[in-house]
Image (cartoon, rainbow, N blue to C red):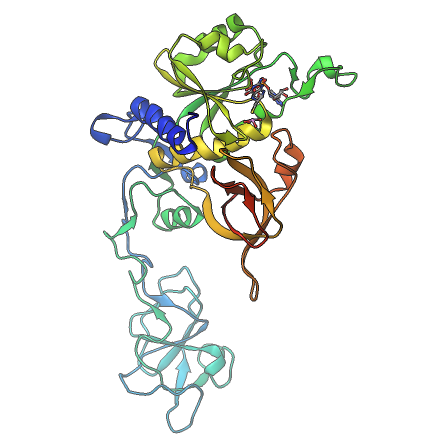
Length: 425
Ligand SMILES: Nc1nc2c(c(=O)[nH]1)N[C@H]1C(S)=C(S)[C@@H](COP(=O)(O)OP(=O)(O)OC[C@H]3O[C@@H](n4cnc5c(N)ncnc54)[C@H](O)[C@@H]3O)O[C@H]1N2
Ligand code: MOO
């Protein structure tokens, strides 16, 4: 029996957890955390809860451009100047944002700008549109304002977050709002969990990197330009992983072992691509068979051949060489394990969508097809259509896709309109 997708997901998780987890499930990679400037913190995982060191907002301030006044407590609140309820005030000095304003004298109204500090002696703001005249008269002039209630258009000190309260929990995957909040709380750096260093090893005699002088006069016959190193490096980087790139390894087991030995002490995971199936020159298989790496065949397409184990105590994962197989393997096995063990990257969003066109799939194989997903609109449900076909060399189609369509192993025919699980890329 071939190994199922779920079994291999579990196996990958266990290999990584065993190597990375500290004692008693302590933070991963055996390290409490590392301090990074805010500019580098997006996508990282917060190591320890951030408590607000100050009130946010730090002082009571105006929510509107208007007039700061003292309002007596009263029931209703007229919207516009009404001579029965309005009051004529003497205009005090204007209060821009950024200053400590003088106390507001009784009977005066101070022009105040959005975000400016409410002066002592004021407890409400009347927007300038509600004033008569509806602009800011010079200091010493007069303005007629409708009655208002205490607290109106005032953002109270600490009304967003009081000092000492929990601002961002430990383990949060830091997004733009978290970074903005940390900055508003006066932090220029944050303690984040360490991220894994992953050695990415691309194999194959046929593979040339773009820019290789051997392709200066055009791609030599029989050669291809690399896709996997570039694709998986981008995937890993977007997942917040630190990538160490090995040079492209020829189909020579000794060359591969030499590269691994040169890097293995400095990384938390080795990820290879290619060289693991049934050919005569399978470099990864030849170099690592008999060592601590299993070569398995999954009931999966693309991504059927997989390697998993360790090399000199460091977790080792081998993805198949076809570019789409590597990309799908990353989404199925590595991204979920990283998300679960480290808190980053964010898992892919999984939704149900109706197939726009029928699909068939081989019996006994879990298939992952590339699709174009369209989210629910006002009058239409979520739908998805395949782009390209099932073959794992169709990189052009992968680049058009925004979703992976999952077809379970037992399903061979799906009619148009059938609901399928879709992972949004
Ligand atoms: N007799 C069998 N043949 C194959 C089987 C099988 O079960 N029996 N499985 C097929 C499947 S499925 C896959 S997937 C591939 C996996 O092969 P490998 O992991 O050994 O990868 P390679 O043979 O090295 O390469 C496969 C394919 O990908 C191209 N490639 C490799 N590296 C790159 C790169 N960096 N950038 C772009 N393209 C790359 C390579 O040229 C091959 O075309 O095996 C099937 N065969
Ligand atoms: O399982 Mo392979 O990944 O289809 O080309």
